[in-house]
Amino acid sequence: MMKNSHQRIGLFDSGVGGLTVLREMYRQLPTESLLYFADSARLPYGTRSPEEILLFVREILNWMCAQDVKMVIMACNTSSALALEAVRKEYDIPILGVILAGARAAVNEGKRIGVIATAATTKSHAYRQAIQEINPLTQVWEIACPEFVRLIEQNQLYTDYTQQIAQQYLASLIKEEIDTLVYGCTHYRHLDRTIRTLLPPSVQIIDPAEHIVVAAEKELSLLGLRNHQFSLPTRFCVSGSPQQFANLSQQWLGYYPLVTQINTQKLSSEIMALNPAS
Image (cartoon, rainbow, N blue to C red; front, side, top):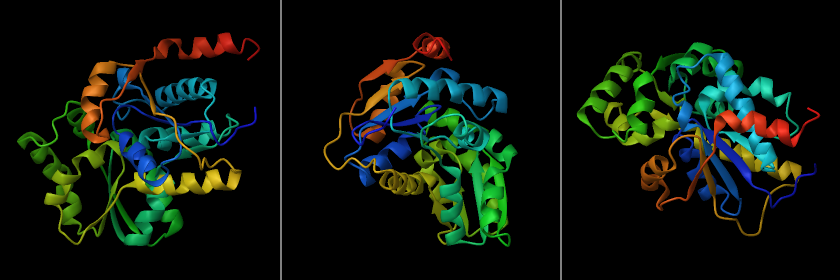
């Protein structure tokens, strides 16, 4: 089916992390209409197997395609690391991931690059590979931060415990005298204030959320799908508790969102019902 400029752009994450990308969309592409899906019932993604992540991503993409979006942004580093390459071959729609955009920005900034990410993203070495493909001389250290997503989703942003955990995660990177730090999980921008207090002031921080939106704008323009008129209100859907998501997200959105619950177990069956021949 032909896409048109007025259709929504789909964004998804395991939870509120992808709101960092959503806010960048509001800032850089304010006339685009958006659909945001948080798979909060299956949070966190960072401890899942590659097979599980691929299954979840396919279910979400099937559902988003049924909502007739014109593009999908994986506002989730774990999904981008483990599923992007596979699903790009399976779906006839532009699908963007955050890792390449973040890697390019990091290489432009420094030569000693630290990446903090989920265990699954770190294990995949997706950032190291992407960065060193661009510049093989760049040194990369990847650190898994398994506690961060849980703490953010529980709104424990400024507790002493969070500060201590962040200090532990960053200690080895500081010892290596990194000049650049990449937020290799979209959730981590929510801890920006805490992280910046622990790093030397000279360390440049890369938030891939800023750069994936630049890439999205280029892709939309190339395909003739930029919307230059007005945007529809953002549609929010979650697989977990709508109220919990709304309560947590309003501090970053600046408003209390209307959130609809989607049963992920029905995602694939609903698509099969829509497309019985598939």
